[in-house]
Each structure stands twice: as structure tokens, then as C-alpha cells.
Image (cartoon, rainbow, N blue to C red):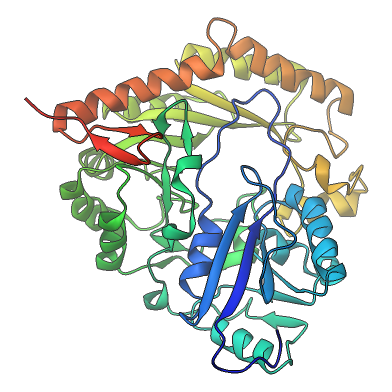
Length: 428
């Protein structure tokens, strides 16, 4: 408790609240990245107990000094506020941090004893000292002062219960990041507000050291874009190749040498935004596939230039270019995104019920159709694209491809939950 003596080890209960899952998408759970990165910045003197409420119940009677709630998504906030209220009624101090905490900081402050805004490296020791003295500040704001990327340590994945993160016996991806910030300013994205518009790469040797330490052979590089610095990408992928990992990422720079290096480094599939039916998109998808890289299209429905016929043509286009997997979402005006500011000025925001900000519900007035029609087209897109084989089957095909590659290079691992460890397939 605040003011405790130096002989008692401080205990923190770190919680990741549950949220409603995307309608029509297969439900699976990746190991959360934000809490593990945050935990790496917590002083060693603090004992951390982590709960992912998507898979575990919250223990409100837990023996802890400080409760830290990590939020990534806007739709997590209603549940996060419920959790905070319960702990505060029990006399616990509650600290909030994470992406959606930063996006909704003023509202979050009403439900917390303290909020942490910005990137945490090199800063959290002060929070701990303030708490021990009983002088926890209501706000720790580092939003406009990002730390040196040399300070970013290896995420503390040991706080995660590994048994929980497999799907039907298939080992899920481990998340890792190689850079922060983004020089692009895409209309639905909040990254510029959160991490700045400057590309800030981590030292490649530290990234490789972290990747090598991850027992899982399958990674998700969660950087917003792998298309910001050509030479850095070549250097990164060249350094990754000897690890023989397989990875998923957001868009990779559409450059033949970069794509070749990415393939050699184990690129499995990329999330590729698809906004139109242009030859640019057609050629980009083809080049990725020519390099052995699968494509999961991320398709936003409801942009101002889309009519009902445009959306139907877009779905036909995705089938024509033989996209491996598609994830359809409804354009959602999240706070501090460029599109949010525009829609607020135009009076087009229909609701601020954050539980509906799951990217599968219409929360704004579309320009060329009614909200009901856009909602109908969302279901049309999912049902039409997956008419012949469902989402699970198409994802299964991607997994089969990577398993074959892993077996070819001797890196295939099979997760055995009963034994609580990963077995490597014996090679002949």
C-alpha cells in the first residue's frame, strides 16, 4: 500500500479487459503485446501478476498494491471502467495506460486514480516511487516526448499464460515490434497522434536479439507499416533470415529487392489494405504472391467515395484476384483520427457508445447510403467472399502453407497443451 516500507515487495495486478469480437470473424486470441512491452519497463522490485480477461477471470480479491489496466481498443473501455470501479470500491489504487487510454484520456481520468500517457520506457520508475510515497499523480503525460528507442527492452512474455494462446492445437503468433511512429497519415488511423509522424526504428541488433529469444517460430511484426525506409527494411530482413522464423506483418514496401529479402526472412502473409479495384492493387497482390507471400486483405467499407455498387464490385474484385483471406470492417471514426475530425465538423457521428466501436457496426452517417444499408453490405461482403469456404477454412489454408515451409526447413513445431510445452518435429 502507499507508504509501505522498503522491505515489502510491491505487487501489481496488470489487467487486459475483454471486448466484443468482430462479427463474422473466427474468434481467436493472440498474446497481447502492449502489456508485455509495458511490463518490460516496470522496475524489478515490482512483482507483476497479469490477467487477460478475454481468456481468464479477473480476481477482484487479489493481494495487490496497485491495479494497472492496459487498454488497446476503444471497445475495451466500458469493461475497463467496470473493473476500475470494482477495485476502487475495494480500496485499491487504479492506474490506466495503453492506446485507447491515450485516445480517450479525459474520459479515462474520471475512472482512474492515475493515467499514464505516452511511451513508458525510462519513465515508470517515477510512478512507482510516487505510489510508494502515497503521492501518485493523476496524470503522467509523455505524449509529445517519446523515449530513445535504445531504451526499448525485450517484452516480458513470461507474464503470459502460454497455454491460453493456441487455436485448436495450433500455436498462435507472438507479437514483436521493430519500430515506432509512422510518417504516413492515413485517414482512419490514429498512429500519428499516438506515436508521432516520424519513423523511429529500434536498433536492428536489439530487434534480432528479441526475436531470437522468442521460442515461438511464428511472429507478428506489429509495426504500423513496413514501408517507411527501404534500406532499413533490407537490413532488417537480411538480419532476420538466419533465424528461420515465419512472420506476418502490415504492408511491406512494394519493391522487388525488399520483397525478395522479406521472403527469405520468412514472410508468411501480409495485411494489405484494399481501397479500390485498381491495377495497382491487383499488381501488388500478384507480386506478393509471386514471392511466396500470402495476402490478407483489410477492407474498409463505407468510405465517402463508395456507393452500394462500388462495394459489390470491390468484393467481386477480391475474388477475382484470389485474395487468400479478407477481413471486412466498417469505417470507424476513432478519436484523434483524421476522419473523426472531419465527421465531427460535418455532424455525422451517430453515437459515442464505445461498445459499438468494434469496426463491425455503423456509428456514423455514410455519404452515399443509409446506415442500415452499409450494415447490410458489411454482412454481404463477408457472406459473398466466403460463400465457397468459410473464414476458418481459408485461414486453415494459410496455416497449411506455413507448416509445409516449416517442415521443409526443419522448424516445424507442434503445441501440446497437455505437456505445457512445444515439441519440435523430429527430422529424418
